[in-house]
Length: 286
Image (cartoon, rainbow, N blue to C red; front, side, top):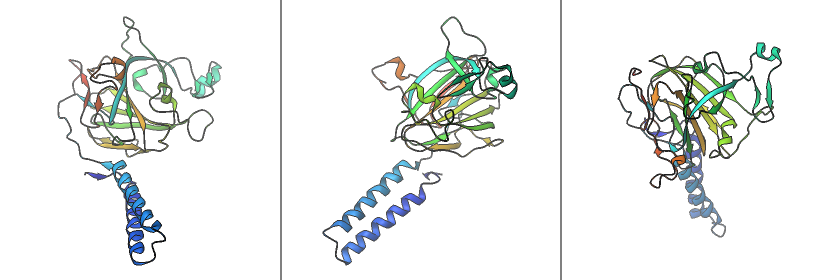
């Protein structure tokens, strides 16, 4: 239902009541050189901003079989074919002594999962050169959400949430918080979720905080069934969402900022739950 996202009603109502009260007091009592009415107007303007930020409009959801819709509002930063080259180490991996440690991103075992497309744990990726493609590759679509975009995220397809995990930088309780438009922001504080689609394919959605955004609020959790376009979470203020899908199962015609097209200098602007970002390759439809 359209309106405000969870968590938005309190701030909007509080600032509205403070603003109205200040205006009433300023009109009935000494306005203190106009400061009380000015304070009231400031509160009402803040309430309008909060209402705009927490807005959660209804969206028309495409019904075409097999397509994946955008998980977030924002501009398409890049679309890349990638391959996993490492993974978060298990206890057995740690005992082998081959763990690589990064001061920002933490520990990595220098081999991908036996089944990289299972997304059982967070993996480290590198871009795939043309002519070197493999069946285990993924497409990664990165979407930059500005402070003016709707910040409610939606499910790309009907699925079951298999796992959801919260990640921060190594040794950090919170953060890091690099600007979301930078590639390095992929290691910011984030929430990673894996969705098992009705086709049997799995996709990975990573909600990434930005320099201003400091809170990722998931709405869906382990074991939950979600519909295509269903609200699954929110990131407060400017931020980013990455979507990884099996490269051998999907294709995309999205124009990103890396294409440097004059009609889309920042990449296509996508709408969560509405914009189709991936289509199934023949034989992989839902």
